[in-house]
Length: 495
Image 1 (tube, rainbow, N blue to C red):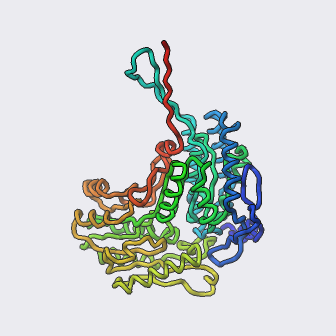
Image 2: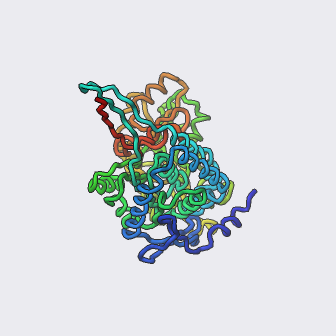
C-alpha cells in the first residue's frame, strides 16, 4: 500500500502556484491570491492567483495570437501526435494527478485512480478524431459549371469554465477537442479546486503544447468567470456547473453571439421495477448518488421503486449506505470523502433538516460525521429518506450531496410522468430484467443519458449532455467535435 500521506506532503506544501498565460507562469495583475485548502481537514495546500478581468484580457489575447499564428498551420497529424504525447505524459504522472484531485476536492483516491481508462481514453479518442475532420463535395442546381463544397474550420478562441467536482476529466473534456480541431483555450477552473488544472497545464507544456494554445486563469467565478463569459474576443464558451450560473453565462454570451455549450444540473430519476435483480440493483442505485459524496451532476437522487418491493429495496439501500466507510480521501479504504467546502456543507445540512420538517423519514444518516478524525473537514453520513413525495423540497431541488429520496410507484405510465416532471433532464437509470420494460422506459424518459441495469457509464466515444434545464450541446463522441467547428461553404465557377 502506497504511503499517500507522505506523497501528499511532497506534492503540496502551502506555497504559491502561479497561473498559466501564453506559456508563462505568472501572478495575477492584482497580486491577490486565493487559498487552496484540503476539504478533509482544512489544511492549506497552496495559494493561487486571484485572477480578474485584466488577466482574462491577457489570456484571451494570447489565445487569439496563437490561433492566428503558427498553431493555425499545424496539420491534423501534428495535432494528433501532440495529444498522444500528452496522453503518455498523463499516464506517467497519473498518480500525482489523482492525488492532487483527492487533496484539492476530496474524491477518494481509489476513485480518482480508477478514472484512468476514461481520461486517457479521452485523450486518445480525440487524437483519433483530429485526423477525421472533413467537409463534403455537394452537387448543386445552380446553372452553369459550378462546384460547391464545404470545409470544417476551428471555431476560434474557446472560453472554458469547469466546476470543482472532477477537475481532471472536466479539464480534458474541454481542452482535448479544442486541440484536436485547432482551437485555442482560456480555461477558468473553480476557485474551490484549481491545483490539478495547473498541473495539467504544466504536463501539456512539457509535452510540446505551443504557447498560448492553453491558458489557465485562476480566480472567482464572479470576477474571472464572468469576464470570460462576456469577453468579445471569445468565440465559444463551454461551461459545466449549476443551472443558474449557466443561465447567466448564456445571457453574457449574447454580447458577440458567441457559441455556447452548457452541461448543467440534474435531479435524475432511478427507476427500480418489480422484476429488477435486487441484489445487483441495490449497490448500483446507492452509488448512483453516494459516489463522490453526491457531488456529481448525474446523481440518481430520486429513487422510484415499485411498490411491491419498495420497503425491502429501500431498507437494503439504507443498510448498504450505513456500511460505507467515511474518511479522508487519501485513505485507500474510504468510500465517502468530504464535502468540498463549509458553504456547501451548510447547504446540504439545510436539506437534511427540511426533509423531516416536510414529513420525510430518515432511514439512515441525516447528520454530519463527528469525531477527532474529522476535525476541520466537512463530512456527512450518506442519507436515505423514505416517505418522500414529489412535492417535497428534497425531491425537487438538486442537493449535490449524499442524499437519496425514495418513493414508491404503481405503474410504468405513472413513474414515467413523475420522473419527467422536473425542469432537469440530464440522466436517468432503469433496473429491470424484462427487455421490453427497459426499452419502453428508456425511450420515454426525457434525459440525455439513460442507463439500464447500470449507472455512471461514460465513454469517450458516446455523447453526453442534457435536455431541458440541464443544458445543451454534447461532450464525447463525434458530436463533441462538431461543437468546436464551423462549416464554410465554398462555390467555384469553372466556366
